[in-house]
Structure formats: structure tokens, C-alpha cells
Amino acid sequence: MLTGISKKIELTANVAIIIVACLLAIVLVKQYFLGKPSEQDVRQQMDSEPVSRPTVASLDINWKQNKQTLILAISSSCHFCTESAPFYKKLFQNKGDTHLVALLPQPVEEGRKYLESLGVSVDEVKQLSLDQIGVHGTPSLLLVDASGVVKNFWVGRLPPDQERAVLDVLWKGKG
Image (cartoon, rainbow, N blue to C red; front, side, top):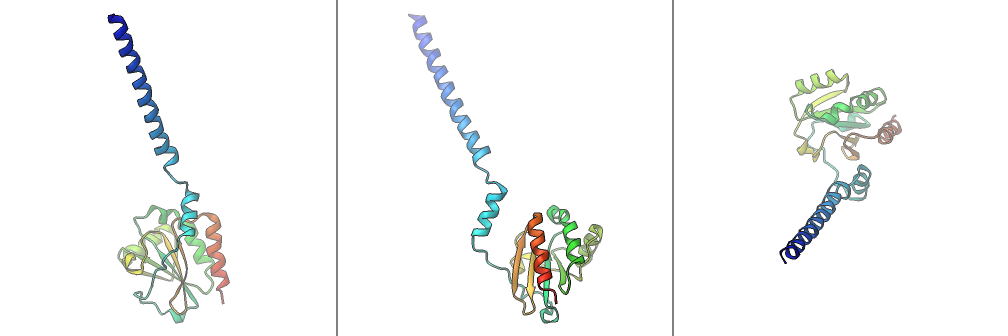
């Protein structure tokens, strides 16, 4: 009789262990394999959602003086900005008539030293809280026309196809 009860308890314990293991496996699969969207899913979602364009009215820039201005909203503490330095070098080399402005939350002199350490040249360096122009992530690129209207807006470290698109837009606006 005692062996019959102990066998039932053992069987019940084994079934409970199997059920708990299955539930744990389901949670882990959902968490690590199904829970994280891919980079492509995030990009598609960003492309499909309406994006409010930043405003640049608070910047002290004479927009009419230039056909277009490309603002690099970056930060010296942003590793994506540092990783994007080779692209920023290409921007300066291929900017045509575009005025290139680096906008950083750090003091201007610190911004200049940061850009110099990366080997990146720009026409102008300014300090401003990025929130003041509606930018909430770095790096961000804002292409502004001669009337001060943001025409294009790119966020994050850009893949090669988007880097080419930025360069194409700069060349299209070349006078």
C-alpha cells in the first residue's frame, strides 16, 4: 500500500515537473526569440508611422544665405555618432553648396575637439539642447531648405543604402 501511494506521488511530481518545464520553455521562447523585433521590423514600423518633423526656428542660422543646410545633431557621448564618422567625412567632401552644421549639447569647443578627433570637418559648430529642436536621439540629420523648413530627417546610424540616399539628396540640391 505504501508503495502504491509513493508511486502516485512520484508520478504526480514528475508530471508537475514536466508541466513547469514546458511553461518555462514557452516563456523563454517568447522572451528571447519572438519578443524582440528585428532591426528591419523596427525600420518598417518607423517608416510607416507618421513622424513629426523637428523645428529649427530656435537656431541662429541665416537659412536664406544657403540653398540648403544639413544639420548633424550629434553628441560626443554617442557611440553611434562616433561610428558614423566615416560617413560624416563623406558628407563634407560631397556637400556641394550645402552648409554643414554640427549641433551638439556639449560646449562648442568640446564639440570642435570631438569632431577634430574624428577627422570630421563642418562649416559651423553650435551648442544647443537637442530637445529644443525636437531631436530626441543621436545621431540625427536634418536637411533644411533656404526658408528654414526641414525637408528631410534621418535618425540613427544609417545603413549604406540610406547613406547613399542622403548623398543623393545633397547632390540633387547642389546649385
